[in-house]
Length: 58
Image 1: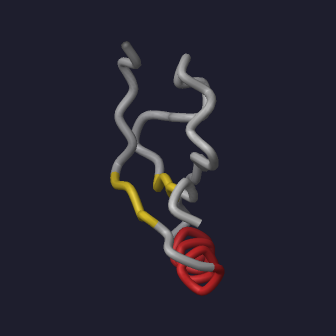
Image 2: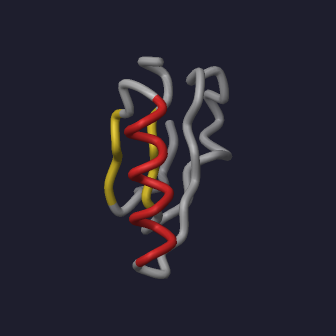
Image 3: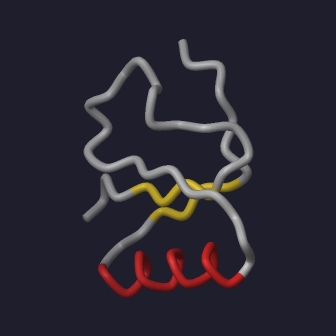
């Protein structure tokens, strides 16, 4: 249903994983989009080529 493809997904298990992801993105000049609860079924939160922390397991 969603035709967007992040560069890669980080399935965060806790705040430490999120902190590491944000630092990685900042240090490497990348773009980030965030998936939190998974309630946005239209896929507006996903952007092509970005780092996508998936917070749904937190």
